[in-house]
Amino acid sequence: MTQDREYMQMAIQLAKMARGQTNPNPAVGALLVKSGRVIGMGAHLKAGEAHAEIHALQMAGLEAKDSTMYVTLEPCAHHGKTPPCVDAIIRAEVKKVVVAMQDPFEKVAGLGISKLREAGIEVEVGVQHEHAEALNQPFFHFVKTGLPFVTLKLAATLDGYTAASTGDSLYITSTASREEVHRLRSRVDAIVVGVETVRKDDPQLTVRLGEETKSPVRIVLDSYLRIPMDSRLVMDQRSHTMIVTTELAPIDKEIMLKEQGIEVVRLPSQNEHVPLREAMRFLATKGYLHLLLEGGQRVASAFMEDKLVNQVWIFHAPKLLGGGNGLLSWRHPLTMQEAFELNHVEHRIFDQDVLTIGDVVYPDSLTGGE
Image (cartoon, rainbow, N blue to C red):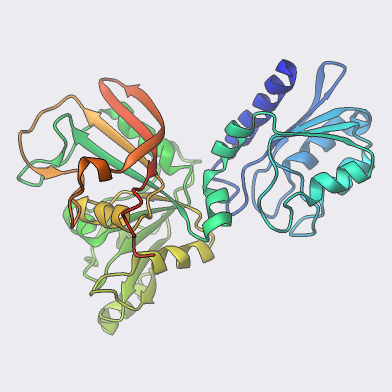
């Protein structure tokens, strides 16, 4: 079992290397082992291209016969953009397949495991399950809910302020923390902000880790299309920009934005605002399964109150302001018994900053617009 866990951990590391490249498919890693030697390895690199199992089998060649495959997610048994992986595994005469977890996607959901067993291949399920599940949280969340997985990123002083009373917020955190944010951006499908963030900060919302790193789609929530035409999100075409607006926005401004190559999506307004839950469902249909929310206090709080944030990343810098803009502010403040809690909490240090990561647990009393 210890050896199985070690090999599966290697497969998980392979999958991690491709995070952010495979969407809307999950990131998957595979390893082939024979007589104590790794003879093949692979990762799913891009939707529509060969899956991890196929790369591992191709690397192993004829040696794959009587080997053991370690794969982070159940091999597919259906025809999609690529042929079923189970057929290739059976043809290669692999002796045993160790699967970290069953695929919840309805077209797979145990069928791959059943087909392998029917072919006489020994299958073991559950090795490193928790780590494999964490690897593809956005994909599993979408399969379960039909909504994107939303990570909220915030940065604050030690006394909880995201900006000074003057509005100044550059820079709260260290260079090392900002580099970590760029790494996070590189793994998501889209970055979401409210129009006030654009008007105040004029952000680029790109990944700045090197020329080869792709930047996610940039999404602005803007009920009235108040985004400035000379903002960097409009003028800079290095990454696609989408504006989600409402029927309240002027047609002439929409035409101007579209002439600049900006995608404009209109939804029925909800209290003169973009309806967040409907917007999230729409973005999921576009294949945006992991969103990074980088908006200000108003947008962040609205997402939290609508129970749309799944995970938070909060950076605290060792600075004290004594006043300014706070992290979050609910329309109806909660009691301590009603407070949102975090599960699977992790702390990381970047220079002198402390990053807290956790999955949000909402109180039962919060309806969240459902």
